Image (cartoon, rainbow, N blue to C red; front, side):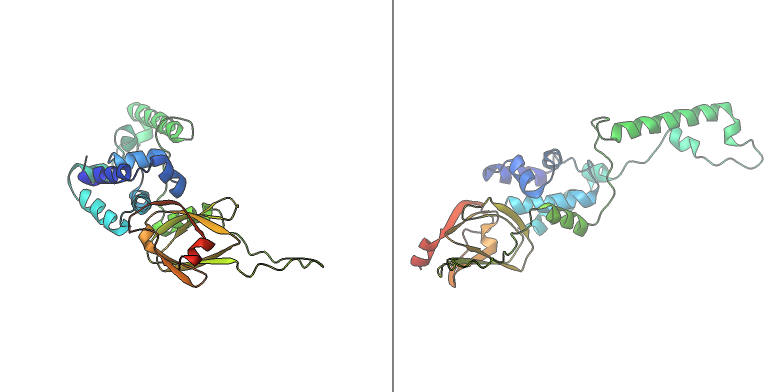
Length: 263
């Protein structure tokens, strides 16, 4: 196994992050994450392998661009380069597609060629059955898709941020508290974040570099994030800064009015 894949696994285990946690965050099947750690880069097209390595590295606190450069160096030659190359068809299927020479009987007039073609058709049917859902252990063939489309698909599957609610005026409705909390974030690099506002269920976000966003709460926010040094927080105009260094995974940090009195 190439040292690059060993480094990914050692870093993940050192930060006590399970493959199931990474799968929950990135929506990548655990089977593919295990294959990446084992250096099995032929299980999917390279477009997906590179996209999955980028998301994996982001969650465990590594620089995704540097991780991709190390991956390119790892498959630059040798056995890994051969494993990453798609396999070409051979045998009876290739023979059945040969072109007849001029002046000779056509291929379908020869019994041997007919038998070879029939065997090839049977092999294709068996492969189709094995690659179909539930037909075998082999992964389903996947068409090449640009990385931007993969990222859009992952982002679209995340729960949407809470919509702004327009309160309905009531004759005796109490005014909103004047000391409500506003948490602002300035994100400098790729970041995964889980946020719970007051007693609401937590929501997950996957941010790109140079992003700004804000949330409102009555009492407190509870945060879990990877790469804690990639974001600076401000609470009601009071700068809180980063919740940890770059590469650190911070869990269940509560930000409330106590943070205002501390500043």
